[in-house]
Length: 229
Image 1: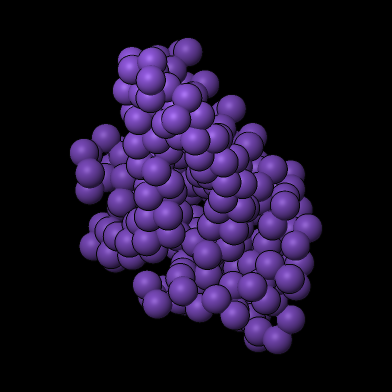
Image 2: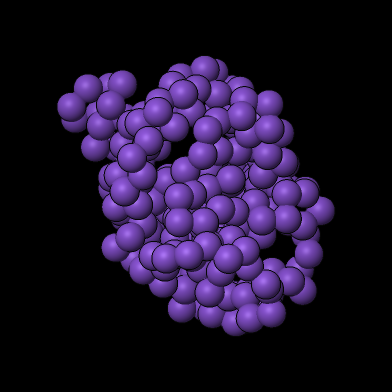
């Protein structure tokens, strides 16, 4: 793993601007645009995982849109438990508020509702933490395999995490750093937010590709001379 390279690889490509201006502009298109850019990110992950020393590529609108949609479907399925949990937290909260309005029912209903809400909130926090750690592994696996089905190949995903868990912790650290980099563009100018967001996502994509490559022990990769790692 080369953490620093994820910050610099973009500018090591002499054609980086020509390759990136179209996918970055696509982010301005409602709904479809972010899917296209996500598909572009998926291709970068795959290229890094395969050892390509120049992982940036020319945007293919249709292919990138398809890959972005596949990743969206996988992410939606995995997000459903969080959506259900959020409703299970909201309903007891509403019951507790209603119970407190009635003095006779306040002790009977409010206390169990609040305890239930506390338990679900703690469980939701743990589930969210696991989700944000595991989903980059799932996303990288989908990027390399290119199918929705690959997002649910649990044995392969578990093996990726087990083979090099430290590498995926570095991806998590990259995601945390990206959370600070992304909003910086708002300070300069609102449109700059898309540039900094794109940069932060590309940085994490490189880390994810590196982690995927480092987690493989039996895969035969293409031969790229002078691959910088």
